[in-house]
Structure formats: C-alpha cells, structure tokens
Image (cartoon, rainbow, N blue to C red; front, side, top):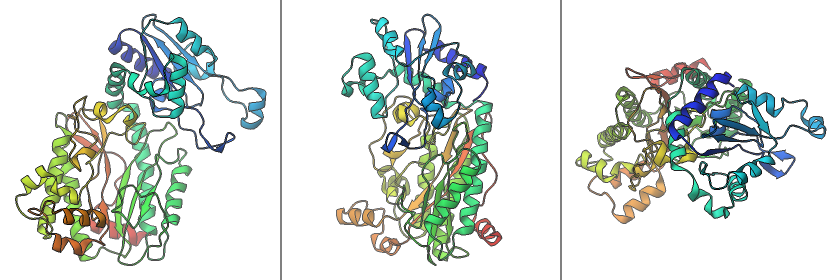
Length: 460
C-alpha cells in the first residue's frame, strides 16, 4: 500500500469530478478451483485497490459524496479462520491505512443501500458473475440488468484518474518491468534446440515469484508466435524455429510489467528470419520515436502499420499503393492487432471499464479487421504508461481464407506469401511512460537488435 494520504487524495479527486450521490465499490471474493477451500490465487479488483488499497477478499466500500462519508465493509477473521490462515489485520486496521475511519460488517451493506432508497447509487461495470449477483441482490436488479446500469460518469471519472500515473506508481511500474526484463533474459538464454516451452515458462514464473509479486498475466512461451495469445507449452524447441515470450511480472502492490521478446532457437536468426525481424524492429523504434503529449495514439498505430507494409513490400509480399493498402486494412494479413494498450494495476489497464472509455474517450471504435483490435486511440498525456508492440504474424488459416475470398489481391502477393505459411510470428514489446517532453522506456535495457540478442544468448 501507499500512504493513507495517497488514497485520501484519490478519493477526493474522484468526489470533485462526480459531485453527489453514492459510489459503490465491490471488491473481489475468492474464486474456487474445484471446491471452496481450494482457490485460485486471489486478485483484488484493481479500482478497489486504487482507491482503498485493501488486497483482501470479501470487502466493499461506499462513498457518500453528499455527506463526505466513506465506509469500508468486510468481516474480520474468526478463530476458525485463524487456525488456517494465521493472524491477519482487522478490516478497521486495513481501512485506516487507506485513510478510512469507518468500517462495518459486510452484512450491513445491503441495509445501508436500502436506507438510501431514492438516491443515486453508482457502480462500475461488473466483470465477474459474483458481482452481477451481488448487484442484483443489493440494488433489486435482475442479474441481466447489472451491466446496463453501470454509471458512465463513474467510469469516466475513474478512467481519467487511473490513466495518469503518479510518481509513486511509476516507481512500481519500473520495478515490475525490471523483473520482467530478467525473465526475458533468462528465456533467451534457455531457448535452445531440445529445450521445452514448459521449462522456459517455469523458469520465468520462478523469477517473478522470487521477486515477491508473481506473474501479471499467464505466460505465453511458444514456438508458434503466429498465435497471438498462445496458452500452451507442449512443444520442444527445434533448430530453425523462433521462440516468442510474452510475459510480465507484477509487484506486490499489483502493478504490472508486459514485455515480448522473439529470439531464434539457433544461435542467430536465419537470413529470412532476420529480414522480417528487422521490419518489426523498424516499426517498433519508429513508433516509440513518435510518442509525446498531444499525439493521437491511433496515428502512431497507423504509421507503424505503414512501416510494416513497406517492409512486406520490400520482401515481395505486398504490392501497390501502401497508403491505400493500409486504409483498406490489407496490412492486417500480417498485423492483426493493435500497436499497444494502457498499463498500470491491470496489464491491460482498466479494460473491465470498457475500451471505448479507456482508449477512445467514448468515441466509437472501428469495425475493420485489425483496426478494431486497437485498444488505445486517444491523444497521449504526460503520465500515461502504455505498451508498444508491433508484430508480423503469418497465420496459415488467414492466408488460406483471404486467398480463397480473393481479398486484397491488389496489395498482397499470395503466391509468394504461401512460402511463408510456416514462418511463425515475431513481436517486440516494451513499456513506455509519456513525459512532459516526450517519452521514456521503462525498466532496464534489454536486447532488441539481432546482434544484441545473439550476444545475450552467448552469455547464457
């Protein structure tokens, strides 16, 4: 947790934006794996953490903006609980650390809301089934009504506060990225013919756990980099392949790192692998160079798409007017996702509140394949922390589908492209802080160029 004043200030700024009414914050509960006593690792709701800092299951909070009163609800451990968990701080002790003086048992929350009948009760979009059921019980809603009743002013107020990272948050994020860099260096050194994806995933997980915070999200460790979110570790690395690691650590305070590295399984990239890698690196460095306050991230994304398309044309895989090709989405044959997303307490920060608010300030998103997956489009501001992660992905099923449909034939050379169907995928990802005068890459330096990657692997 940060100092109590940090949480007091955050709540005061939120109150200043919203004015009046009741704000309901639901913390998360334990989530059973197969029965109640065996649970997944607990993860508190990030907005609850941001405003109250209580990383404990079974809590909620109510802010009365009219009376200037805040109550944290939760139950202290019984003796039966303590037998299994050991002594833990009381709810009152935890609340004081967040600058809240009033607490009550969780059972009293429903009564408080019932007595407030007729007043506006604002809540955020539920992303867990348990939250939908709680909202239905607390507010007299049908479970299916909970999503539609979320407060847009509450969402927008939270987004604008959480989007701009304070100096103390930046320190946390930098620590998370430093650990993440160590994870990626270890993976580069392990990626050899005969190594197993599962072994590398286990090693990077060990590094994250040993640092005290654990993983920010499930590890992607794969020789099939063309599968953007590959959850499997079934393969043994073979000569001639490339290995992609997308993995990040989180700090004990839950701030996330998020990096992706791609390296050859052999000592160095083959000529064909290096050609594609250099295209991705060029797009990556060009995008970072454009990051500064006031620049719409959508423009940075489209510039990166044009750079990737230029590289594909140099390799003979694209043709024609590349500006028109990008406008029509032909580049999405190779780059199917967005260039980056916000980061913070969530690795995709605040995504539960809705991309249209986090990344678009309420404006509609594109429906075009590829561009519709861009999570961040708004103008950048000092204090934003975001990823930059261009990639080139050769997806056999996508190649076959578009060719059969005769799609984008003016821009894609399918005859040459078919020779790349077994290539895989390459992604380069780093985490960037927008500063008053430009931007800064967070964390320790890590290998990016082909030469740096080869040197790092020789050290292993």
